[in-house]
Length: 446
Image (tube, rainbow, N blue to C red; front, side):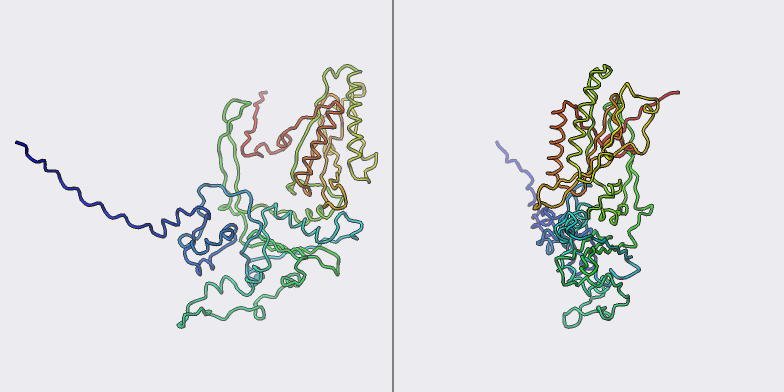
């Protein structure tokens, strides 16, 4: 006789709640920001939060939860958008408790004696240099929107009985501003739009304009007073990197700062304007590449050594033709040290004047924009040592630099010189210059 098998009746599954708006927003991965309330975020929004959010217009409605970045990793994109839609109001910008001003001007010679075709071209190059250093262009429409609207005004906006937004206190207008504006800040409403550019990094703001009366480029820098690297903003990070030379891990230390060191824009702008008497300096953050000429084999034989010196002389003649016309033969004078004329002083370490700097124009034709690079060479050519050649550039495109490097390599191959690329950090005094290259530490015993 078969008895029926009684099994417990499973409980009905719990109803799956419909996806909420919050869960749907988490799947939206195009924009890394979440914002809680539009009106409140307008009061909280800062430059760092606005460097990307304006690229995604639909996000202005969808960001309702978190008013901060939601990056999936600890890195940020290396290239920022060209423009930014955040700019402090005139009340904030001209408040001496928040910003300090630093104006300067760059006088120009006659345009027929400069390498730029117009002042607009020069201004565009100055703007380009600032974009490279993480500045973003502030459109004129954003500046107009920020006029008369300060952070304190946005926080004090409350809803009235009629449902309209009214101010809880007297609104500050340009005619009732509490702080007098310096004369160099007045042209923020300049009618000459194409000759005025405003750029922002949040805690640093710059305004560039051309003054036809003085024939000068005027630059006004605004520095936020809170943007200082106190001990809380400086973090030291210790880690280990594998060193292939030593076949073991090497301890490395890097320091992270919230705010970058001040950039010497005054000196850089003079370089950009074409001051041939100035050289690229270390603080200008120029791009660079380094090569070395390797001596020939059997250099101890007099005939081989003389042939090697002749190759270098041909190379030096080629370099002199590529430089500016005002370079004289005495400036291209490079001491040649051979086994026949070598002295004890030649074997000593080189001093501070071990390099010669030459400016090399990259402009080919009147229709191209002004570009140049700097060639740095050893002041002494020693047949027993490698010869160093460095290319530094600040006002040059990658295409022009690559073409010049290829031409240099072809010429050296034509003359029979062995040109080898060397890492730039090999001559740096900072052994921990590159965060992903382990420094080689060789212990030396007494």
